[in-house]
Image (cartoon, rainbow, N blue to C red; front, side, top):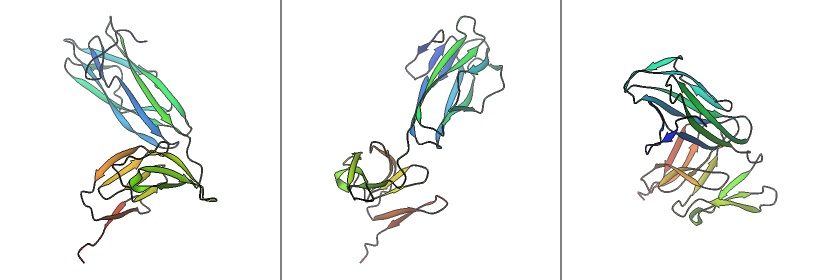
Length: 220
């Protein structure tokens, strides 16, 4: 474990004059071939003297770094530098890595940030998903027999009228008031936006990935 590590209440790791935010990051689940949204990492000098960051190590595939400064980089008191860390893997697995930031602080020369992510085994080809609507269940359907197998609960707060599985491995759902993604492994919904219109009739993606929403005509 790196020396001089203490996590503060703002989810930053402190090592001498260096504050690193966040102190850890979990990218969650994604399917092989997809890329998790990058996370910004901030290195801040909270001391009274200039601090030199000499390098970053310990980060290997499938984690990636981008926007790095040229090392060594000197950070003035109160100033900071930023870069991004991401996750992308072509194969399934649970991944962990500790990013080590090294400085010229003689007493506390390193700080560590734990990175985690899970790349799930994709569903079988031609998997058919279905929803029970107001009952809040996500199921898979065997196309040959019609038999259903439960995946998990989408929650009673979303009366899903429509779902669509995209090529990028994301399952989208729409209801009279909400648009969301659904975890294909456990059914957990993740809210995206609120239509704020009960006339919602359906949604559809075109070939370019643009989302279209239809509304019902209730004027008659």
